Length: 154
View 1 (tube, rainbow, N blue to C red):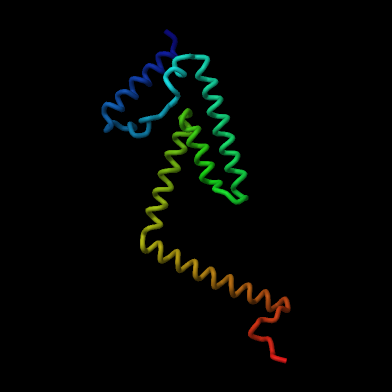
View 2 (cartoon, rainbow, N blue to C red; view 1 turned 120 degrees about the vertical axis):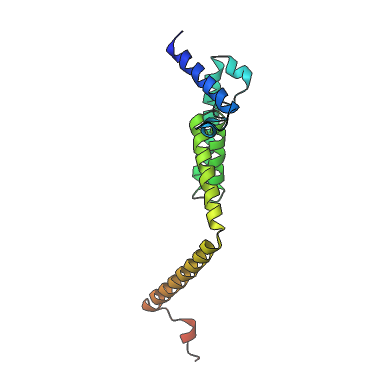
């Protein structure tokens, strides 16, 4: 037996043990990772790499479309996450990135719902808007634009 098959066998046994006892360290990190290709594709050695190339190409097209949508009207970020989800059906690295992103988005949503954080954000937004308004008014008055309240009736 070669070392590659021994290592993959050990990984498969470790994954089975992690599923059997989820309290083990690292079990939640590795649970459910790997290819989600249909079994008949996984079973045929030449077919699985071409399946992966197809999944990568479709995911890449979706991600590129999302990147193009970022400056244009459209749901660019959502489309990019859709492309990552397509990649995550086949590639472990994409599954890990998607899990990390979901965790960060959930944490940010929980922080945003905190009443103290909301008050702080509203206060900072109001201060920022008032500051921008004052600066725009100063710039307009310095450039010679007459404000509507300074127009004299003739």
